[in-house]
Image (cartoon, rainbow, N blue to C red):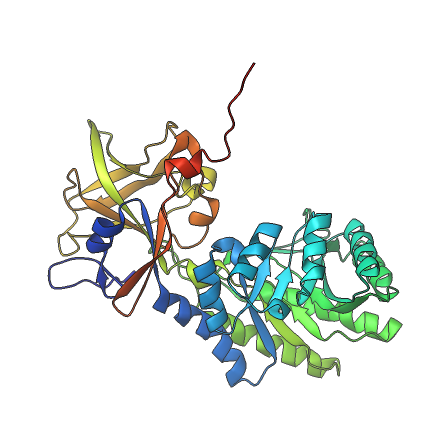
Length: 431
């Protein structure tokens, strides 16, 4: 993993010394290189354009949702996935074009669907039979129509270099293809005057480093679409193949270039369209982590250290599972560096501990660093996805600030939470 370093051996993010950002905004601090966000977005968008393929690249805002982030996504011509009233509200606050917003969720509330219909968003990804009935009643009441996709489980699960073919995927999401659920849902939607079925959606996994799983899923969905055309005369205009494109967290990770995923999907959809004499549907994808993951860096300040003879050296920082719960939640791995010692050789391995009152609050178990001292600034890389998005107030720690950096300039886009803001919902109890 390559990082920009100046002549003083300081880590640069978007041409700005990380130490200067830590000094000005405090730590823990999420820093996003906006140039990297734009680069990742364009890798997808331009690939579809160059191939003259109709497409929507929808940023999955669950990875990191803020007004500023959604404004950048809009500037890059992305569409947007939301999964809650809160994410939709953030999109509206950001001035995101409603016709390019898609709503997901396995248990959409009445209010969420009403809000989506009221604002006339572009599409709802329907997840279950209850939702079809709910949406129908809301559309009928509001005298409106809505484009939908049916989310289906194609029986393929993919992760990193592996994929698993299953007869009936055990998932809380979507309609199963093999059991006939998807066809039953198709019939219900097809008969509904207020719901316009645009096509199918699937999502096969996350942090995927190969294209084979996506290609298999595309073939499964196309086989279904061909059957529905032959049987019912229905032709889909949209095929949404989800997200899950992998990024690099550590040197061991070897993801594909993002345009390779897009090229593989284009090739497979074109081949199947030709093979089945099927009108080429618009291709939709949903990258989230792939857009923001590597663009984000979290900066901490080193506090105490603890030497366990012949075992390890613990280095504690001023953050932890409150700003990055992923290592504690599912043993996610990261790499780190001392931001003002980038030109120094690592001398020993350290274990980076968070400050929460949990023994499992460990950000990194083993990382080689130059000698670490109290007050050093530590950067943990590739924290742009599911860091701030999953931040919490455990131990009543404040949520960290977020700074965007681009072309040597930096701007605060999310303020650090104050203690007054943390307790603003608390009420006194009087017996």
